[in-house]
Image (cartoon, rainbow, N blue to C red; front, top):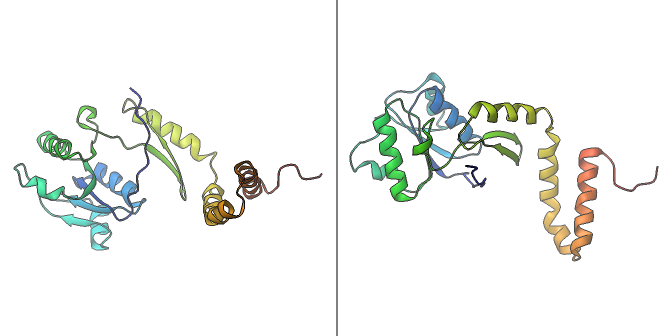
Length: 201
């Protein structure tokens, strides 16, 4: 089954990662790339995560995730949760609590416990491409990502910034929708190709 792609704002939003191993660290890196406010719940951390905690880039709660009702309190105001422990009972409990509260949850490598998947991501500034195989083959998604990385230059992110900066003024000054579209296309062509469409040779 294919999953509908949806992009959500995570900047400054509370995101919890349960687990402190290498897999959890990978998820933390992805969330930090989008400026999420990451909390990690785990008795131990990898050296990478310890460093991030020391730099106060993540909040470390040095404990196991509670198996009783008190676990609810940790999930308050959460945008999403990732369970990445090697203990199935904890992963199942996290999934159950999140589903009960309507919080998106990803349990790494356990498809039936997830309500969302992490896509393979190609990021060029604010230009973000996500690749998903519906949880069927992370290896395939990673291969598609590597191929896309070779064809999407960093200039795409710069172009998005410039077009975003002038968008409101163009919308105000150019009331005709068709003319606006042509202008945006000309600007995009100039930014990415160094030329304008239809110019004289």
